[in-house]
Image (cartoon, rainbow, N blue to C red; front, side, top):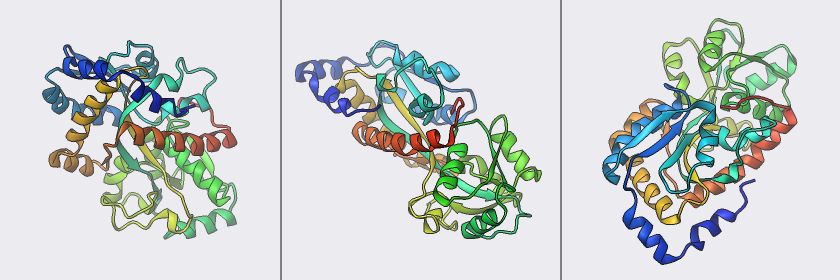
Length: 316
């Protein structure tokens, strides 16, 4: 999965062909398929498409096709007119399902758009002040602490299972139908702990209904500079919900690079950065090669967690 063939794809095409593609593209509307309306995937891509449309001189139209999005894009013509905006499920789903309808290698990244770091939050009544306290309490009460998770295999679920594997604690997953219900269950005291992404939990931290004890980044977060790093207690622990923009694998390099240039430019606009940060989302905007390298690394790391924990689910 995610072999280095992408490097060959980028440079195998002739220079003349690449130049022609770059000059002619785009000449018609570009479709961008993504998950459900009002999801983080949807929010991120709809923030960017008006800006990128203006830069390219053609409209980018967002279509909410849910779990079919990746399969539809993977099987589309590799001409740059059908793209995918999706989270980590696009490359982790094969670990969690018997069939997914596509091969992840039939997609290539244009760029990683954003990340939302996971934050460990607890119900205010739980007698822990930091990550070390949580580990100590969980080891004193194995199997007695419950953590809330929404969709099975989604980032909050994987973040919790990664934490369990790296600390040796035994906390029990209580599954809810989505992040919103899981957060409501935690605030109601039905569970004690959760590992949501930063974009979904800020308002509840501000209201005091939940208490944050650590953020899963390797360096201090610009959004939550006051939060201690989980990695200071659990070395190497990091987790985030990442959204990327993808194209069919044989899309000409010139088209991929043109899209990358305009999307990265949009991500770096001060107003766009400000709006993302306010929503608890960090813009990325890397190269296709950097995006692929990160995806390969995360596939290996989280794939092992999924297999070891026996996670089966949609992973969206």
